[in-house]
Image 1 (cartoon, helix red, strand yellow):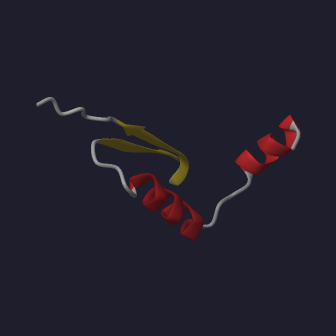
Image 2: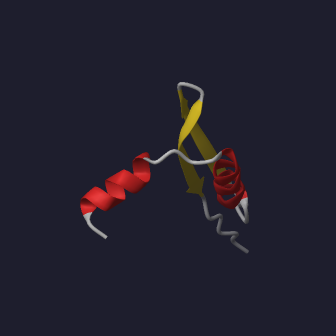
Length: 58
């Protein structure tokens, strides 16, 4: 896949169902961390997942 193809894919409009699925995927399995959803003009444009790994000490 070329850079222009990746850019075109990133700019294509996503269906609401795809956005909801992406948000669910970002939340799935996360124990500690956050999911940030960026919205522009009433549309989700970015979903960012930050996960922390906690190490318990005995």
